[in-house]
Length: 316
Image 1 (cartoon, rainbow, N blue to C red):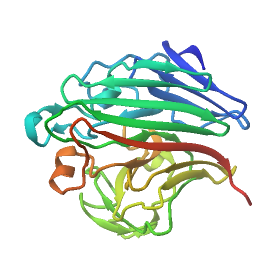
Image 2 (cartoon, rainbow, N blue to C red):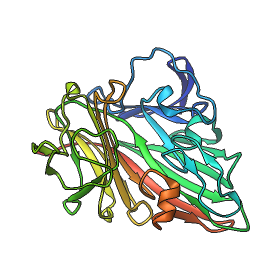
Image 3 (tube, helix red, strand yellow):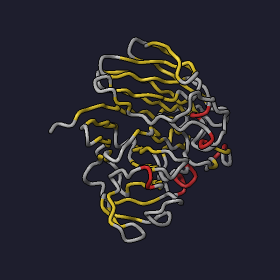
Image 4 (tube, rainbow, N blue to C red):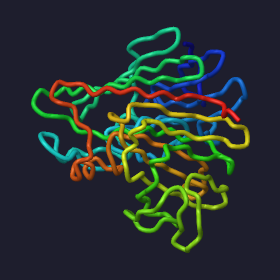
């Protein structure tokens, strides 16, 4: 573990002979880079900004840098906490913890632990990260500080991946139906429209492969969820021109849902894809609670899960 700066902000660097990563504790402990040292490929999406500005609490996500991996918790959409003593508390866009500084509580040779305590809701969010050869391993823990009621939450992996038209999504074969939740889609129809996956027809009747990445001049963006739970607990993306892959592996019982974000020039001109394993759906904690697809931590209890990002090479 070392220290450096990333676009003007102090960063924590983890590096071995396989990978190099960087995090910014003062900026929601954002993971800014995941570099394959064997090939030089940067897996995380990078913006053209030369310097980063730290957002204030409650800032709109689209007003700040969208590169890398931001932790999204306890909601994706701006919403209200759904129940109990904290009912009606406003949860900001993309949650609370991406826009506040984290405290590093433990440092090691191959990793570190950092945490953040909410000022408005009864939780402490802790993440430990370690490098293990070609893997980045994350250990997550949510502690409910209330002794009176359960804490409800939605966590999603919000790692924006760099892409090209050769990038293809990898998912278990059983995930073969999706539902769109993107109001600005030009392809999949209104919110709640179901489609077969990966091949479907657009609203204009064109056959499209939703696992493929279109060029940036397609000028569209999509967000969809798989209709069934991802019980196999893995997903990934492959750069088919080189065979390089990033694979996520995790406990499908603790993180049962899978969303996908694809922006192919249609959002701020960005060009990236994101596979988003998540503990609840659909982007909004209030909605997730209403449809009983929300995660809960009992009073004074813990909710823990692990996730591994593995950089691999396709075997021909």
